[in-house]
Length: 239
Image 1 (cartoon, one colour):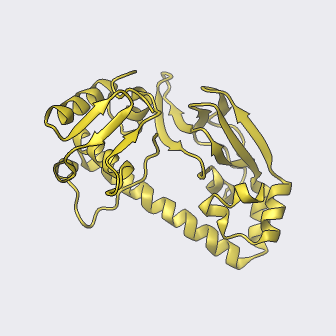
Image 2 (cartoon, rainbow, N blue to C red):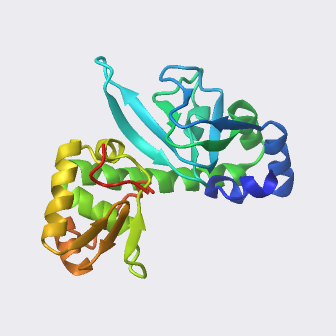
């Protein structure tokens, strides 16, 4: 389990003794596709590391509609910042998009461990600061850019320059919600980009044909930091 804990940037800097302590208070959780892990408002006594699969964090509107806040992939943690609150409750729901395996970590004991080591506290602050910078970039993306720009930016983030293609394993509706656009708008943008010869779509696979033009659509600027929305195979035009 210690090797699994080290896959998370949040935990990789811990000492062997600290990792041993975390592992002693950790449990494995297996979820089936669409299975709920916790609900909005539940007491936040644990935080989680995804080992396999993918987890979506979402909020429910009074009418029952889902707004996807984040997609969490293997090696990523979530709900850890809540350990610093008194009597915290989860502000979102969490559920598996695909069969998933997670490590459930004791938030209270982890917080006690932080009190014992200033160095470990600074490691945690550094990791949370990086997360905050990513979220600020995402807020900028969602509030200052068009639907076409959001989709283009997403593709550029997920396909580094040394690659041309990616496969998505998220339903169109989930990904559209993550980008704060309607599913039909997402489909329209993908069709337009493909029609202009900027990308090529074959089922679950997307290939970037003209990265420069896609960058123009994304309205990229040197001083804008992109967030890292999670993704991963799906027919882009499938609900």
